[in-house]
Image (cartoon, rainbow, N blue to C red; front, side):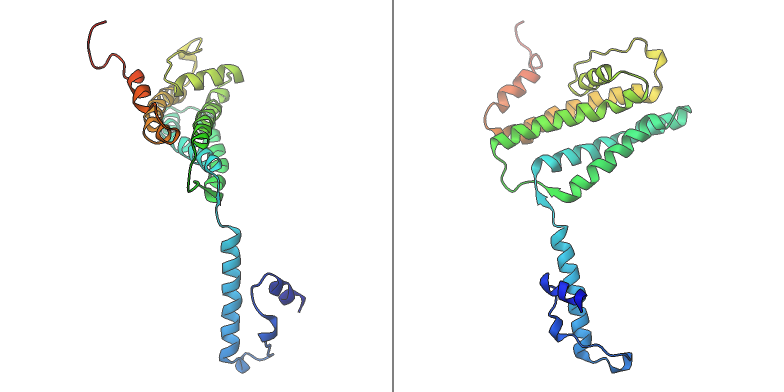
Length: 219
């Protein structure tokens, strides 16, 4: 009785409409309907409990983590083909999926995104990429500072690196370094296409700065 009273407090079912019989042959249609109401109440309560909350920052952070984890698959395959340690790329992939998947399942993009929110989303995008992208470098023995610098250099397509000697690093890390630069170029385009218009203005100017020298002219 206490169990069904607790269910009544949650507005699942009305306990007064329940009837119990020791023999299943005595069940009536009303009892079946009531039982279906219990199941439906549970399902509705679970759906409301797990309904995704509105948070663009958490959703973006989770989505970036999952996406970056998936882009590590080619590097993981290279490590397997070359006989290198699978932990170098496997551990960061696992971390990204474990941290990112709950955020994507729990949160969703906001219906209306204000300019301050768009700026915060850009900051979260870059910081998440920098911090998560440094994990493979740290797995190879780099210090956190050098790994963060290498990750930021790749995602910002700067091209500067702190590799003392390329021959001492496995091929999967070199491929991930190239992948981060490729992803960084794509992210800049996506920012111009989606996030910058939310802030308002400056999109064409910023794009022109990124493509300076491509249209020819006097130098």
